[in-house]
Image (tube, rainbow, N blue to C red; front, side):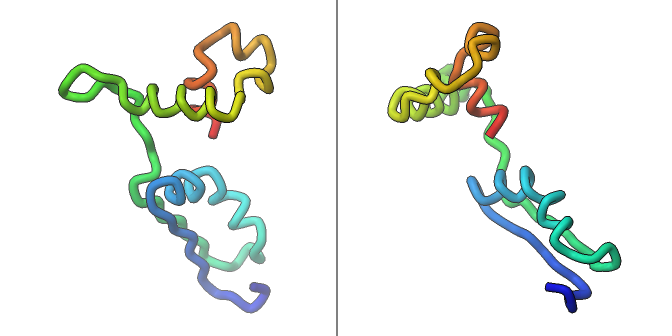
Length: 92
């Protein structure tokens, strides 16, 4: 990577979210004169109700938190401030 002139990081869906979260770190792997671009395709999951009035994204994250027992690993100040699945969603 030391000889690169251009670099691109891209991902779709969960990979798009990873692209958003890791773009700056990715750039840090290259010399300052390298042009780095990051393209996230559908990497943001909106916590909003569907047209049917359901909260599908929040329900999915609640299932992930329950499945993995993630809530027990959160600092108490975070877990008491908001629903653990929301913390997982916005800090991923």
